[in-house]
Image (tube, rainbow, N blue to C red):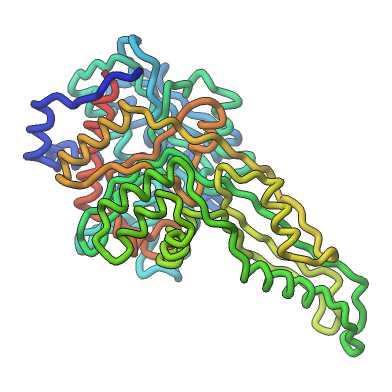
Length: 459
């Protein structure tokens, strides 16, 4: 049985009066943040090694011995950084994770240079300001602050800044570290991205803590036939066959359901929401299919929380303007509930496509992991800190619809919790999009939250 976790009364009183870090600590975190955002680390056109090297230089200047800093990865351009802050060893380490690669950003798509760190109108702008260089910056600033303060935790604290979370594949930093350098990151549990604070209309609603996530399966759909001259069309056209199958897929929806994590989420939302769906949210947690239908129709996010989803994302077909197509193909990207198997999804899709001329194959590797246990120490600490910094705001367990590197860690036996304390407007989250940004106030308040959370859990 885990002990009931309480923050010291003195700490609670101090935090209630001050949500912002001291000026010196704010400036340190901002400087690191700016440096990381302005390094072009797009997962296809950039490199993470300059980020790892820049952070290593800062850590060494702050007094961390070179023996506690590792820089390396699958290839020279895709380096990870791992640094260990030594504790007494009375407890197993905590891993603090963030990724340093970012989704590509084109200058012509943005209203500013995406790789310039800009502070304007109360926001920090730049690619990676939300996903995930804010957390990377705060982890490093927190370790340096601990060093200056002489903080001695009961366990080692390990920060890992990793490559290719966005791109995945053979250069993914977490997978590479698990396979090649497990001893560097082995921990009792991990704190990562994947959870954030939700706001609506300027009001903080909840501080979401990710304990599970959907997993990704990409399917390739293909229709092949002999083709021919376009002046002599035939009924069996590969493009039309594929289009018909995709049309059927577009009209289909997987069954609605909840699991342990999403039931907890909707129970919490029922206590927070004040609109017409309040009672339906409680019914969803109780298993009402009618309520699930109404809630799923209300927002895309709730729909994706309640079911496996599959959507066409890429198309290809034909080889000449004046020839009947010999190939028509599509990629269908599925975000699958943890309890749904690949075999189940494959079987359902075959029935929906309803055409034996449309071949269906899994494209690439599939990775999935179990949910993390609802650790009492993590949730008590996060809950008390959340309520202290933002009175009345609860910490809520969630399953995220996207994917994080927590998937690989959970599969490797390291429970992972997505927790940040950075608040975003639920209707204006710009991860991966144009003019990505982070509220200045949210960044600094998140810095306080993560600093105090790690300090509390490290004892």
